[in-house]
Image (cartoon, rainbow, N blue to C red):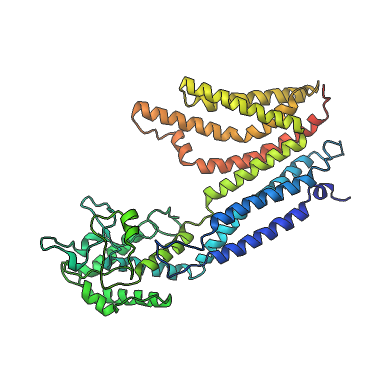
Length: 471
């Protein structure tokens, strides 16, 4: 047999199976990522079966993992003292890691495909142009947002219709409102979209009003109608009629109320929209709400895709943890693996209780650093003396599981210490601890690289440790 490791780990069948499953999830996600441009935000999406797909993907991952382990654990050249090179155990762990990454990321492929589908309707320039138009048009409908006296946006206020305004009430000028903000709760990628895009749109349309550029506003409303017609959406007024109803230069107070959709779900607004006036009702409407709901999905797929550095880190951490658990079982024994698991659970409860009693937040991670250091010293002492394995079967399992936590634990101690320092001194610490807290994601990614490096050294040590007598 020319490649016993590849054959025993079933790498070819596993690659074929997992890649086929990924393709199926991609096709499913792409199909589910289609956008119904006629749907309103409050309407229940009957096609939203993502939770079912996520559950199915997790169940499928577990089934594939179990079936693979059944075949993988049938033969163990390491325990049978089959001649192996110094890097053979490291290569074996890398293959386990690759299989775990592929088998744990079916949902990532599904949601990535959904984002691909949403961004496939238009290129980035056309998509941004349409979002800008929709955003600016909102100023002339009940989707506009109120700018408070303090300069901050308040909760959305929907004006009552002209028929319900009391004689002593006075409408706010359109100049006191703010345009709809796409992705107001979205983290913007600085390399893609500036954070002040909505401010630019707001200033642009307000500039037209102040300088009495009626033609520019008419162009805006006409462009909006073109976009609406491209999705087979219609209002009950023309751009010219709309302009005449809302364009009341110079104060822009005596404007007509224009609804953002043909039907207002009053229960939705009563329960979920924080309004300071009654629900809008108007005989005139444009299909803005449908377009905002649909283009928000496109916006999020462009500037806040599902697969980002945080989500990617989560998938990698799960895969690394699973691969280390499988590898430790592979190189030790089921008995040692189970005893180590129970021992760590009991230790976690004891240290946690001690930390609660003492009231020192940093004591818990520090105790675990000392535990890891003690386990490492014990293992290295036994491995170097070659006098007998003793309890190292159990110790090695715990060590393989705990070593990846060293960097996160150190980072948590630094952050906890900084938080306590700020609380007691009432000042902001702009030192190394602040850098750690600000770059925690980068530190955790670096920790994965550290794991790749030290595992090479640890696997070489484990190969030598295998030759030590049991007692």
